[in-house]
Length: 99
Image 1: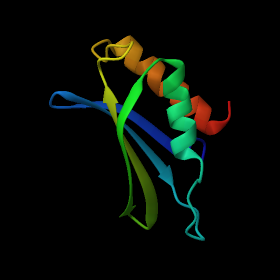
Image 2 (image 1 turned 180 degrees about the vertical axis):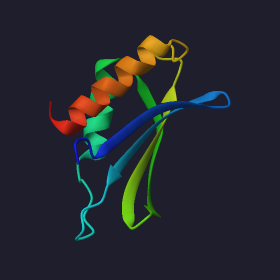
Image 3 (image 1 turned 90 degrees about the vertical axis):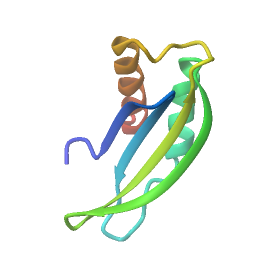
Image 4 (image 1 turned 45 degrees about the horizontal axis):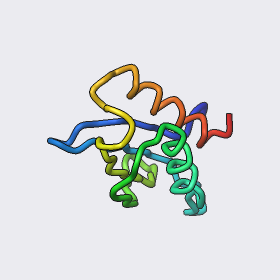
């Protein structure tokens, strides 16, 4: 698997969410540092996290940990720009992959 992490910035009504999906290993273990790595990457952009949740989902013989971060638009960024959204996704993905 080239990139086992999927990252999306999405609008949910008035809120902006960052969704991170990480595949779970066959032994059932997920990644222990996802919350830390994502919040660290967002801190570099000056983005505040209001809420963070984790859930497990199964699709087609594969299990995923899905992390949901509710972002505060009142901090130092505006999620309206596609360019900023792409930068956030790239930064988070690179941090999670260790690049």
